Length: 421
Image 1 (cartoon, rainbow, N blue to C red):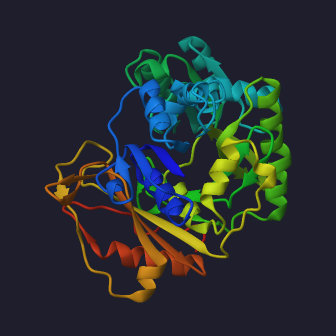
Image 2 (tube, rainbow, N blue to C red):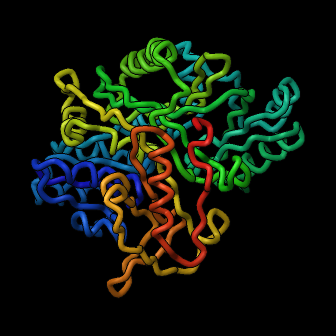
């Protein structure tokens, strides 16, 4: 089967790596891909979803997999389905769970799904009145997509008011901040959970934990994610059961009632407070770097998982997972996340250690090929993924691989998975 993957990051590279293990996969096309994806398949440069759908028909693409959120929110799934093509991801309407924080919070409220106390508003005075009623810190969110950066945790009420002002004026996030959500701060620990859904049935992947801050000990600015690990020991069977019955099942039933059944990846950002799970946010695609740690843990066919989801046949799937742990360390460019960095050539030492060859790999993201050489040209350049029988072993493998990779200004955290260790 020929596959088309939409996107250009480490998430899309990791999906392709997992698919390459399946003998049923023929050619993988990437739109647009990155400087390293062409080692796994063919990069194509086609803009416009109708043109992409025509390309998919012409190349007999059996399945398209959408990585990032923007094409989903734009409605790429609806376009491909109108051409009679199989595509993995939610419809434009269902993508509102990520595309609009106001839609999401109102959906949670309507279906009694546990979440933080909140208001939505476009009015500065109403916002300030609600802020006065809350304890610090206070969470302020832009309504629309902001590339994972539209959430401010204000330490004081004045800071929260300034954050709202910056968003509503369009200064902070442009159109995405023309309406805001203000909510109480939940004090607990975060988990990332991924349900693969076909509209009615779902498969739950192991819970992961992401590291958002740039620096060790969760210091520095928020980023798109500096590393992740899975499965996490911070969840047990009782908590999984509570999340299924209080969150995932009401969400899928609610989306059916709203006449926008959810298909694809439902990524639930959870806060666990006193052993009770609350929804912080929904995303409608795999997290990045969580995808990089989840793909190697799937023992059964990843192609089957995506294809049966896209064709509403998850009921017939028997998913098997490796009894292993996976840790991913993100290597970022010198000036990330403040500004873009000058291109830097990537040198990778020859890996001689058999254990490292078998239990670690690189997922490339912000890279370009220039004159046959690989250069770091993006913010998050690549991910070093380690696998092991314990979190410590997986982490050791990931960091050993980090030591084999060199480029000017490389930066990475040295404490990924510290919560579990």
